[in-house]
Length: 69
Ligand SMILES: [Zn+2]
Image (cartoon, rainbow, N blue to C red; front, side, top):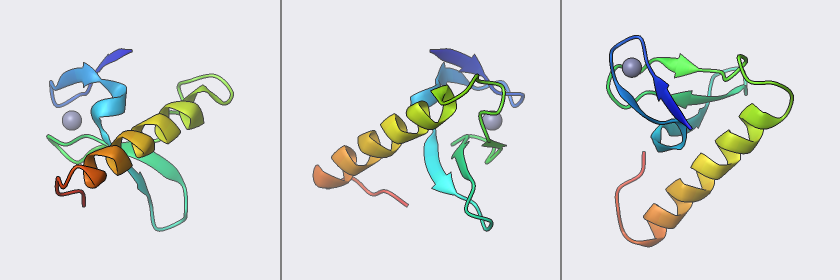
């Protein structure tokens, strides 16, 4: 799934950084501008599934020794 951020960055939604905000809400952070996308534009559980997949990707990269914030 491709998405364009308002900062102009386009790319796979799952390439964004999965984070939990101060209130415990899950969101994906744009690596270019830091914009938080709460994926509320996605129906039902789709956003959460995407977030989970991004999270899994992060953990895989961490296992490969890459820096993950
Ligand atoms: Zn952005």
